[in-house]
Length: 140
Length: 140
Length: 140
Length: 140
Image 1: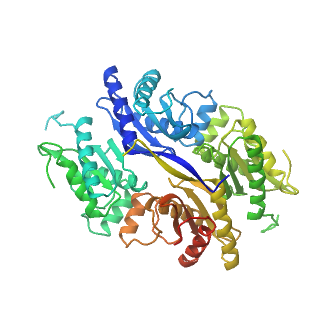
Image 2: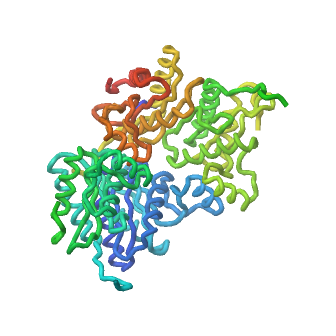
Image 3: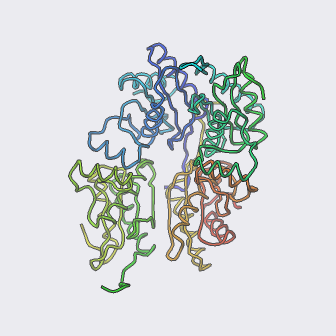
């Protein structure tokens, strides 16, 4: 193992492509959403709160993106009460709700997208649409 | 005074125009920035963290936007130690640093833009450029 | 009872031995982990976040170590909903998940180790391996 | 500009080399220290609290490392009251005290080291010694 390893980084341009595609999908579905794109450390790169979405859903879209970046898998797949315990342990920074997808390119997690304000299924659909805009990103 | 009053609301589309113009200005200046657009309640509508900007400056761009929306004036104009005392009282949600400008249309505060990661003067310049993209918005 | 009592204290050298043995076990298992060693007051002495582990698991490894030092027993053995209620009451500083073990020498709790990012069983296995590196420490 | 850019990542092994060299220097100076190594997003990779150091200095070593990673320059060089205002705005996650140095390899910021519990000059000396252990890291 080396001291410093090659890595990939999601640029703002890449994050904005994902955000725009997710917004377009949500508009098409007529389901306004909060949409968050984060880097591999779970920190925000790009965000949009659509007209008519729920203001508190910002917190869940942020937490979903952060959780997907950390866990490297889609969010919302942990059995309760484990999911609830983890959410409490991580003081709400983690959430076990569907709508967060990691952004994986060449097998490397470079960030995640989180969507909140619809049903779980709607949130996932919008997040998936976002990822299709990034060439080479793993589809879920 | 009536029970319910006419109001104006900044849409996501309006917020995104401001964000895009601010990014374009920061690129032209070669000063990567964190840029936050909030509604009249200081809650985030749109956000971008540019490549090469300081990750902690998210906190200051958010606080500047929140402060400008609340105070209805550009940020950073309060004499110290009053500015510092207010920031402490508001636990960092308020900040007395330049780079936050209220978005005012027809005399109504509909939101604010906050910019952080450059010098104070650079942050203000980028915020001003953002506002020029919204027809009818008061110039600062 | 006297005013001042004899005590034992885990040194950084002792904490680092536990950390190194836990890392070696996690490498052998090919399960990257976040590993935290705390003193008897639950405050961090030594920490490592392994390549490929989940960044949010820092919060759980910290909470597990803190909880084990406080409760003086392995974590994750409290029946729900009591465990969840305690976690909420302690605002995430306490967690009822397996992976935290107290470090007990001569019957005195001198600290704890917490492990997070694997399954509960994997976390416990790594924590146990850590303790074997400290001569005289109670095995769990 | 591309969607995804090449990047470098500090491994745990690299972080531990920096930590070990910083500890060795602090021992030689007989000044016990809290030492934090973070990734490029300011999140902890490796940590040690030396015997006899000040327990609250954990908070400052963490904040110094986070600040140096974000600002991409050594900490403690901002004029007050600007430094105080930034610290308040970032709710203590930023600190304008000497002892934080970014880790830069091939011109890319891959993390930072923060040291706290001595005088500012002692903290900087220990941080510098840490960086010498990472081949190719920029010296300060």
